[in-house]
Length: 273
Picture 1 (cartoon, rainbow, N blue to C red):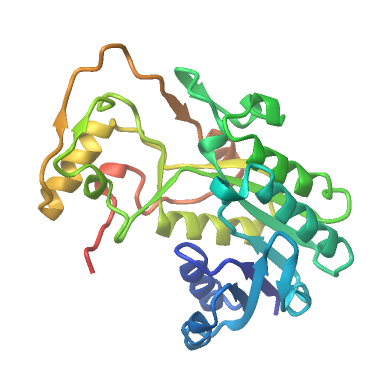
Picture 2: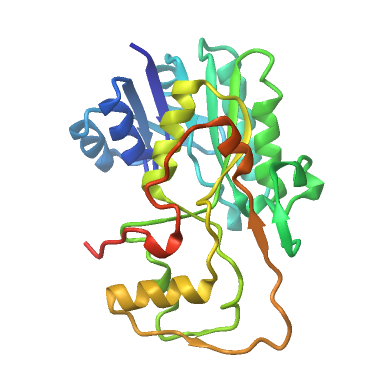
């Protein structure tokens, strides 16, 4: 039985852990707050405290006693600065090099892609200088540089939506000038399902994780506002066309036989509870 450690059992990490437990993995997980340890334990997770400040503080050794390491730590810039997350990952990767981990899966984001007014693929951003989020690409590269020693997979996830993350909630009653921009979303259930499928197939490399269809923000906002009874936003004509990108999932589709639960963001499942 394989052991998986998930660094960051938050909005995606916790349901992912539950799915992997159902699939027969032994799952360890980290949280930064003692209050959340019982929540993880009740889900069947071997829970540990860990903070990356950026140096690891806590029970990292226990978490690195694993076959597979999933790193799901949102980058925090702001007051920490753009170098904070790459330094978190650099120090974590140093510890991983001394461990017996044989597979690393790093959760990145499609925010690395600039708005190029066209479809973008994984080849459009390889170096930090090409990216709209250079800190993330630097972190990605830190892991990919280890690929000679272990299996490394980088997942550039689109906007994670579903359940209480409801697009219309964030624009209810507001004026929107980017209604014609296509969305690059992925439902949380599909993000977790794709990660589980990737682990089964042991795929390595960099992949975009987005729903196959890309309706406009206007369509998505209006649909979710109607369904969940939020105030409809006001769509104003922009003074000039808003830049956009359509993130392709073709590389992942070519490598992985996965059936999306929610291929169309207009049909995502949401819940107010």
